[in-house]
Length: 385
Image (cartoon, rainbow, N blue to C red; front, top):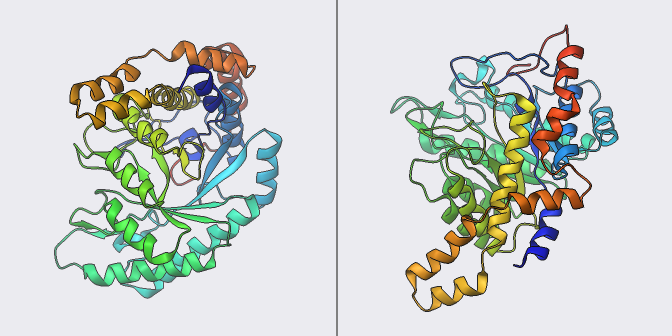
């Protein structure tokens, strides 16, 4: 793709930011509080709107329920629209209540399962009130000891809960089923991989798709192959972009393995799926880094990986592949990855009427100082708020 065509695509790129990343959240041993953190879902939307204002490509914000519960979700959606963004995917939380110690939809207690399903159904209603078209599901369900519960029975319970939820969705809503390699269940996890997620999605129907979280894989996993396979089956629903070094996620996307992010985006571009139905979302918890700048940098990292993927010379790559030119094909890919696309993206932003450097624009805006001064009193939002 030539530079002019790439710039057109980059201007149309869309990356969803998560509400929870603007609050106090982070690693498992300690959440470090920061000044200026939102105290309400409305203030989270303010921060998300600032990210979109400076990048031009982050027009929606995902909600987490009950963390983002408000009395009037339609009013929240209207507020978001007035601020230039929209409510994105709705993410039910069925993992923090004490009732869920042994699982939620897979719990051996039918009363607990019923409670969890009711939460999922409520989130469908919230999605309808906010205009969201995506229900994003992740379950912490699993067991810690062999024999603790029947693995097969738990899969049956999961299938039943997903069917009830899927059948309750309106015709224009998509279910995204995320998987997680491990944690917090240490013997077996009920949805541990893309194959388990895909199996359930295929049983449900075409509006059930797999959500790939880039930080939820075993070390060495070829994530781009998973992406290619799901694209081939038309069951790649979206991404939760983040990064991890040892085990789980929560680092900024592209922080630990920018080449891996590029390889993923290359598969997306090669399949002409960048502007299709795949949802590109961030899922991060910024603990030691400032919230809004971390989100800006994350969006920029995805943009850079996308720009490099768009610059891969497809014809040259296919020729080398057909001819069995191993190093030639690899070289085509590496040439694109080695390209400094920052000037290209700066030009794209200027053509969109934006500052060429979102981080510099944020510093110059005075927004950080303003929210620290204004958000005094009340309780900062975070995990459990």
